[in-house]
Length: 106
Image 1: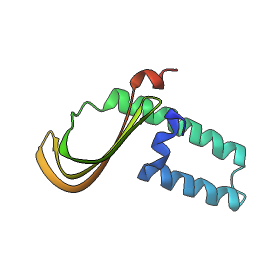
Image 2: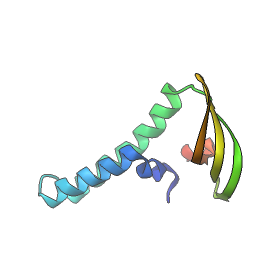
Image 3: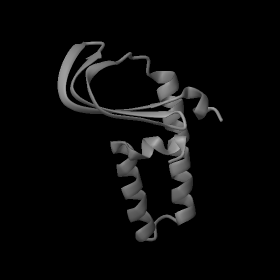
């Protein structure tokens, strides 16, 4: 997976991809235009998260699995305590994907 494409597996990215597939199938969009929309989505997500989100999140839990491939870390935590600005929450499972910001500027 290319680094910029990682947001396509988010809920909004999946919905966008499914909608574009439907529009291409119905003849409303060309495959080339749908691809351009996905490329713009990738760039827009990186820009929006980099400039408009300043919330800090911390995790504490049991690591079930972790991996690092080309600067992209994936952590799968169980019985995790997630701290966001409002305070801690206990969740049964959380998957965290972290990308080195240097990879986003290449």
